[in-house]
Image 1 (tube, helix red, strand yellow):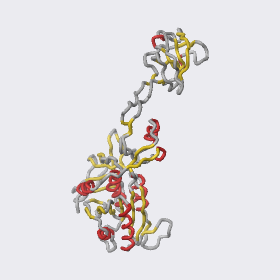
Image 2 (cartoon, helix red, strand yellow):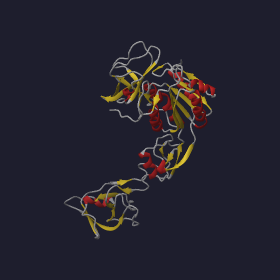
Image 3 (cartoon, rainbow, N blue to C red):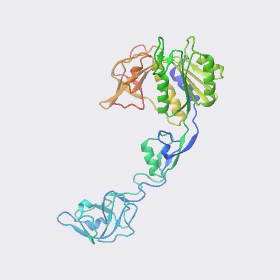
Image 4 (cartoon, rainbow, N blue to C red):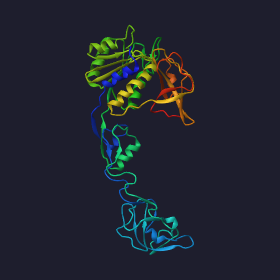
Length: 407
């Protein structure tokens, strides 16, 4: 049995980054960038109007107010997509719509609300004194040409999609999705929807794994519940080792009579890096390598497998995709946390902000079979070993579940 930190170091030594592929922008949502996105032009591309109004020389509006308006000659219109070619002279103004290029010679915008209004006449009355640069969006004030817009390794969300489209990216380079096999073992497992017979339980872990793999950015290419039969297990794993980047098991890596997974891995040439980690839940954790695949054997208890996936598998998938690993946060406990004397302790928990500080508490249910403990949780709490409980007011490590909110 090895320490949690040693186990993580061993995994890190065996990680790699997958190759990239070019995909169209409309398929990029939820993928991970494999290139820095560079601004190919400044934003805004040119000085433009932030308001519907009139482009003026601000000096020509001096002294204008509601009682004493200033009259300027109207000499043209500039609209988005149809800029005016007129160069503004003393005593003149140009109708200028929101987003329109600022005409040459103009240095301010007077809003239409502060004028006699748009018209087809020859002049306009202005009822306010303008200042230099008023209501003008300056070229490059948001983004300069050549600036990094989005960094490599970023998950593409609607914000990234909008930015990519704004800067004309039709295709982008993204990390290939890790190909992942998930499987569970046990004669007692049946699929939801079937009638439970005595001694049977529903297969829940693979449904959890499938959801977590998708959220992490992987692609499940093999999935099966395998009975307690070595031949069936060997057939599944032989194919998985040839086709997958990551293989994840639920159960079968402990010391029971029918826990064949570890033995079959070895028969197929998998190099065992470690087995058993000083943690609770999930001591019988297996990690190995075979062909070009990374293999993680998680326990069968639902809480052990769920927490095990988040603490061990999720970071693996993130690294394969080229993402930076998320560092745990530190929060202040509001309720006692039960530590273990020689093991690192994980529990589902809740974290929230209170008086500007991140605080947390473990869920009430702590059994490794009590999956309902995850329903209201938004994080996983973790503590090093110790003889006594951590008490309220002490710090603890917090790993936020990415799809949950801090209240």
